[in-house]
Image (tube, rainbow, N blue to C red; front, side, top):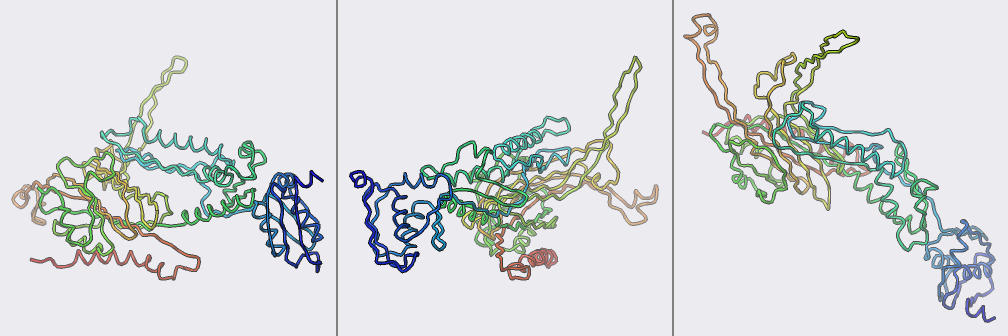
Length: 533
């Protein structure tokens, strides 16, 4: 009798039961340190319910759960919710059977590609197109474990770093290098992330560390199907559910990157470049001074140039920018690519030429005293053009852009149009930049100050007469020319949110489809517009 008074004091006041479901309100009062299992069993006895414990340790865990309650005039469902669900257990009540457990298994869908991606962007002069920008895909390891994926991630990172920092003689040395390594081992990191979110200190269920490494694991990931299955307590499942909902929302966001690459041929060959302060006349403009720019080492023509990063509001369209640039000289649109990429995924834009050159190798082999000379020929490639690596990251409605532009040109422009392989690697010049900026949705960032000065000689002649031998010298002459060109890159990111009820015919989708036509028309109209005298 003393043992009962010390361990458990329970009073249940019930009017005569209508049926086993206890439709009549329940009143419960218990002393302190009463085992939860005793309270539940007493209610089951009064309501004529059979109790089944789903997991082996459920009864023991309920015995160890001490509580003190006072419930008045509550329904059976409310009482069970308070006692069972409120203590991180779950139950089902079917007719006269009450099933109680502490573990649930739930499967979540995650919309992401089943690929481990490591991208390396190198803005040094590279005599191999394959070494300049690389996307390494490693699918040899199909194990869905975080620990084995970590080894795969380290190998991919080492491959990217080896490529970027290679001392291969085929890589030119310009004195400045910018390396950008993007590691995205989504599925390998996800396993540890889910384990950290689900199994917090103090929870009623804590899996053994060996289980997370692969033995009777409670987190199963199927990359091919995009499914994650977890076994945990109800509260742990809810935490994982909230995390995956936010994760899916983040990774499914897309950014439309609208890029205009313009070339300004300056009328004044002695210019120091475009005066970016004049951009303030175009509207609401924010210019980042050099001390606030997050840039790494770059190579800009030593002849001069006023480099600045300018951010424009949505009210400043490309047409007005082109009109402003035309005050400095002829404006030519080199390329206007539009790339739709997922959040935190790099978009790589390449515009240029791949020049191949012959490489002859002679080596000698000796077999049993006989020497044989062997010749081999290879055709490595040289990339000359514009390489733009842009990675967007969305946060609080704003876009953080990591921008790595690189402009590589041949010293001799005439060889770019040759249809046969060159006899030797061409001499290249490069201009490069690395920057990290934050913009609002729809704002535009302008990168400029990449000035290139070229000198050459051209022949002026009268048609036909200038081609007649001996006589042509009287009807033609050679003229030394100097040209100053400046590359201007305009980037406008737009956050794209395509809801489930939006289709390709929706207004938002139509806006994206029309952007290319509108922007190209703006440049064309601006170039064809008559200039003021």
